[in-house]
Amino acid sequence: MLLLKELIGTGVALVTPFKKDWEVDYPALENLLDFVIDGGVEYVVTLGTTGETPTLSKEEKLDIVRFTFDTVKQRVPVVVGIGGNNTRAVMKDLESYPLEKAAAVLSASPSYNKPSQEGIYLHYKALAKASPKPIIIYNVPGRTGSNITAATTLRLAKEVENIKGIKEASGNMVQCMHILKDRPADFLVVSGDDHLALPLVACGMDGVISVAANCFPKDFSEMIRYGLKGSFEKARPLHYKCLEGNDLLFAENNPAGVKAFLYELGIIENVCRLPVVPLSKDLHEKIIAYLSKNH
Image 1 (tube, rainbow, N blue to C red):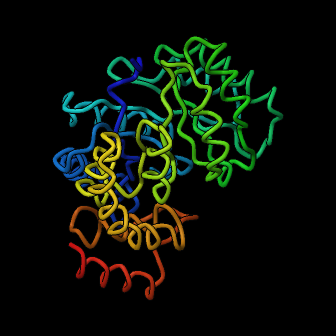
Image 2 (tube, one colour; image 1 turned 90 degrees about the vertical axis):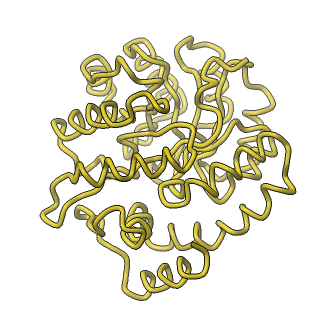
Image 3 (cartoon, rainbow, N blue to C red; image 1 turned 120 degrees about the horizontal axis):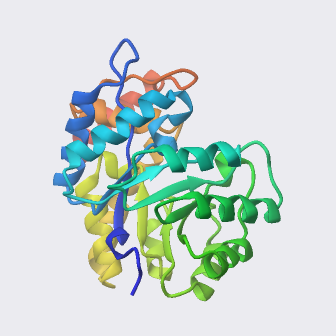
């Protein structure tokens, strides 16, 4: 049995809603949390990259974490994103963030530095020692500039006690299968790629941490639950229903795409913080057309 069994299924990489003056919009964040929880997701992830964390101050991050816990009220587990490319600074954050109510910490591998595999291993080993909660590795080469190989992931899984899972967003199916083939029984493996979530569940993954579940929580979480039960005849129609929506979500930028969807659903303002900008008019109109057909 997986030690993080409460994180099997669909987690949502939450956006951070902003007002038109670029301040954090807490009423909209409450609306979003209620929307995704009522939509059936298994858990939420706050302060991920989709939350535009590079543009949030430390004080804003702490306020968002506290607000999320207070709003969720233990209806679902909460995972907190804490990462960076300065290992010592991330260790201090792990020791100072309000993590008492967190199920786990999601931590992306260091960006820009492009460390070797040994550097990545030692980075996570240091974080695991500092963290009061289980660490979930986040491999997202498209954003960080470096890949965590299957060998490094498995080394961490087998050698470092507090490393309890990985969000795999390499898009490399073969790499994912090597991790699934040799992972320890108590090591959680979830997809970080919405397009590949169902195929990866078919390969043995435990679910997904999803951007799309911000705006399609019901369809996405049902699809993953069907997949985890092996009911692919029921999961497949939902997979293809979401496919065009996923294309639109990531056509220009994440989270600009999902924020456009959420704006049209009446949940948040369509505001991003620079350097991220809202979608182009043409793409936004395609989203309106998609929603008119599918929701």
